[in-house]
Every structure is written in C-alpha cells, then in structure tokens.
Length: 315
Image (cartoon, rainbow, N blue to C red; front, top):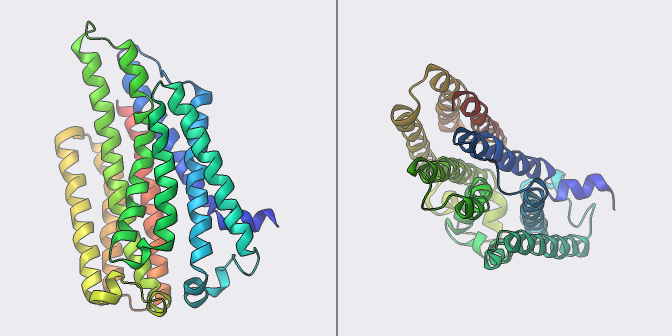
C-alpha cells in the first residue's frame, strides 16, 4: 500500500483543514478572550492535540468507508480519482475505517475522562456510527446525507470550546466577577457562529457536488436534490442559502464588529466571491463547471476560517 494512495483515501487536505480549524478556534477565539480576563487555556496542549487527533481519525474513517460504499458511483462520476478497488483493495479501506474509528473513539473517551466528563466520549462513538450509516444508507435519502456532513462540519469548531468550558467552569466560580462568566458565554457564541457558517457552506457545497454527481447517483437510484427537483430548482436552493449567508454576515457585522478591517476582509474574501459564484452557478451546465464551483467554495471557506486572524488583532 502506497502512502500517497492512503492519504488520498482519507482526504488528507480536508484533514489538514480540520486541524487548522480546531487550532484557529483555540488560539484565535478562546485564548484572546481568556487573556482579556487574565485567564489561560485550561485544556493542556497534549490533551488538546489528542482531541484533534480523535476528530481527524473519525473524519478519516468516514472518508475511507465512504469510498468503500461509493465505488460504483465514483467509477461513473469521476473514474480517474477512484482509489478503492483500483489502487487500494476494499478490504484495506474497510480495515482502515475500523482502525481509525477505534483510535478516534479511544482518544475521544480519554480526553473526555480528562475533563471529568467521560460520557462525552460517546459523542465520538455516535459520530463514527452515523458516518458509517451515512455512507451505506443516508446518502440515498433526500437531503439527509447533505445534512449529516454539514452537521459534522459544524461540530468541528465547537469541539475546542466544548472541551474547554468544563475546565473553565471549575476555576470561574460563582463568586467571581460577572464579566468572567460572561466571557465564557461570548466564547461559545463566537464558536457557534463559526459552526453556523461551517454548516451553511458545507450544505451548499454538498448540494453542488450532488449536481456534479448526478449521473452516478441516478444509476444508484439516490434521491438527491437535483435528481428529485431538477438542476434549475436546485440552483435556486443554493442561491437562497447563499443569500442567507451574506445576510447573516452583514447582520453580524452591524451587531458585533463595525470596524473597517472586518468588513473589508469579509467583503473581499467571502461576500463578493460567494456572490460571484452564484452568477457562475446560474450559468453552469456541466459537471466540470460544478466541480470548479465546489472547489472554489472550499477556498472561500478557508478564507472564512482565516477571519480568526482578524479577530485576534481586534479583540
């Protein structure tokens, strides 16, 4: 087994984004707010690294099992990029899924036990199971598969906060100044905002990918949006979701930031590129065009994540 083939199987580029997202939330949001009230990060570097590794392993396992079940569809939609059954055996993909899930769940339980919430480890067990059923069952159901992937993407920026807050609550007691407890709430709200946009962008991208993969999905009789309602109506769904994202960004700007650096950054890297992609989507008709739009959405999502750098300087 070549390492390059395995890395392609587990979508190593997406795994890098997961790592960057979790560390960006930790050092771009949690750390600056805690620093303002003279507190430090409570979750140590090693436990946090293990939390990141647990998340990466669960995601990698999900990608492996997805390719395991998607051989027929992938051979029809993009045969040049098929790994399982060509460069790696199906047994290898299944074994990789099992090993990665085991590591991810064990690490998840360990870090959960470290913060004195062992039951939280079941979250990783639940996610690993859901990703299996996503690949084997939910992808055939209208919008269910899209929603599951989007929810997993939304969970990633929340995890650093979910595992930090219990330890903060141990040191920020009721006798402390209200500003300290309020800061914890603000940290969660900021992370929730990132989770919201991760969900929305991922949902849009998954729908665009469904337009790209119509041929293979049709052969497998999957009920995706473009197959059930047609390309044009599906495009309008994406347009509406994009309008909601842009409106949300403008609302957040008015309510929370109101500084020129934030609006310029968000306008140049997220709002205007997203609006332009809607124009391109409206004109698109072929798989290659949908593929390019899907890839460009990933770039916009990456720059959206980069906004934590602006936050770090403005907080």
